[in-house]
Length: 68
Image (tube, rainbow, N blue to C red; front, side, top):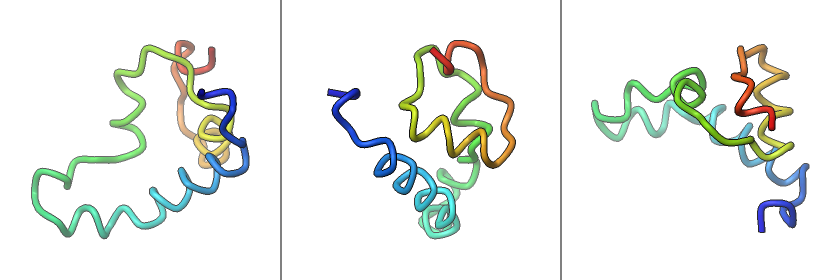
């Protein structure tokens, strides 16, 4: 299923999520610690190519496991 998802669609969805993270943070303190870095910290599987492209674009240190 993952391979069937369009790379550009996943890129745009990932970008939109992080560009509007302040809206999630406003929902309560439990969401305040969610950051791109925290999302990648414990990842142990490859990211979709579209998501990987976004994280590379913003300059995150991406774990080898997330690169596939």
